[in-house]
Length: 83
Image 1: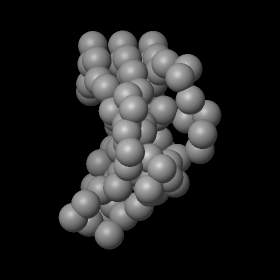
Image 2: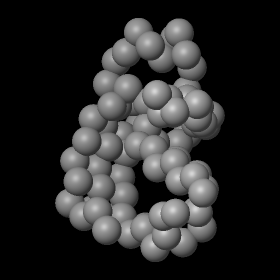
Image 3: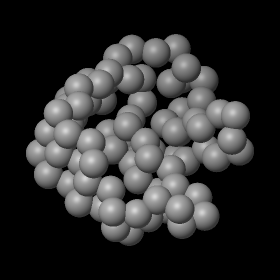
Image 4: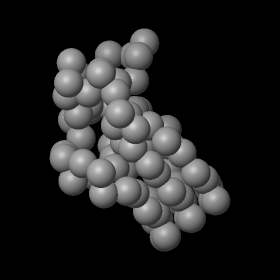
């Protein structure tokens, strides 16, 4: 469970699960603010999980991307509208 989290990033909040080893994720009271970045024009909207080989596309209207698990509960998760 993650609660009362405030974060800033150049792209999005990302949770990438492989091998089915993470379940029952709960997010509550999470606030995301985007910031300017030169990397965005170079890479596009992807979650880059270096050094792993995973690069996950993030839609333009998305600030939270969860991949690889279906057991997620979300409440009061907010992102800015600067895109």
